[in-house]
Image (cartoon, rainbow, N blue to C red; front, side, top):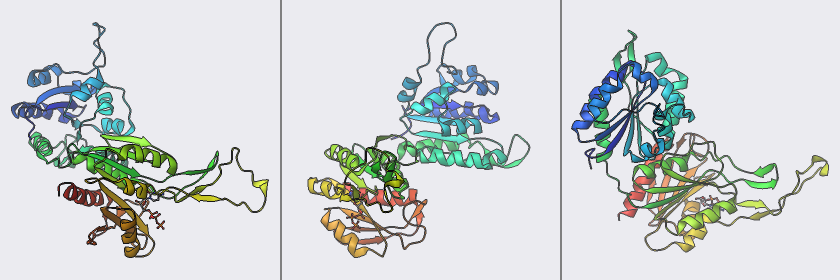
Length: 401
Ligand code: CTP
């Protein structure tokens, strides 16, 4: 697949590098893309809409409303019509707005409505680029599944030299071409992923929970989207933003997660259960907040929750791929193998709390994949995004076997 015939929505922000967007439009049009330009109001001070509309062959949009006609630019339609949203140059201000979900202009509203992949090519001075706020915003956009086209290193408009120059239009085009040419081995496949902890209510204000951050499951969901799957993410309470292109099903308790999983498992080709589901839940939930003067000793009676993974394992049909996780406090191989067999899994991802940097809350993980043929694959300590890629590569191999 190539960029030919693709609808590219090009966002242009207020940056001196906006002059390069004229050349980028030329390259995109030459490559056969249909280009719709949307400028932020400040961008129009750097390059005229007339230049960009002439090059793209389409009127340039800046405002939500047409001043006198009573019409408006429908940001949802514009976003959904795009095969890719490309923001080049992306100013520090627009990056911050994207990261926070602000939408005080048409481009930001389109960004929030976009279902297609989003490419962001930042351009700013070196100090702005290196500032902690910008770093945090970039990381947040990455966590949404946005693609960052890194800025170049060299002379800057300020007279300083360093990182911050907008990537050259040829590089941006190459980035987009690579995206459209990339294989989508899971296109047409339905995937179900669970992530995060569950919370089991004790009374209206307290619960039993665990330290799961959800990062592993969210990274897997984002990677499955990149590989072309339709992804449903059933998530317990986390502080993470939804990855772009994922259908979110928020749940709180193990019982709610069970219901959501059963509902979605029927049509799932791939299911990855990375959630840290509570094994026990309070037998009775107090209607009122439990007072501390109710005695020195408070007993909590707990009952076992339903093992969701084992339930799905029993329902699994020919062709469905089911993957579980095992977090063990020792090396756990035997225990993980036992879970793999009992729960009828295709493979299990083992992580041990003994490995430094692995497990629940951090950004890295160290896993061993054990499959039903007892093959072991031990991976090194890696960022969770790369671990997700390793797991998904296994899924691709299994689905296409
Ligand atoms: N799991 C689940 N439902 C539960 C408990 C766990 O679906 N009620 C899933 C987890 O999402 C994970 C796998 O089962 O993919 C392993 O969970 P774990 O708690 O380690 O396994 P258990 O079989 O509960 O074994 P144990 O607690 O004895 O280690």
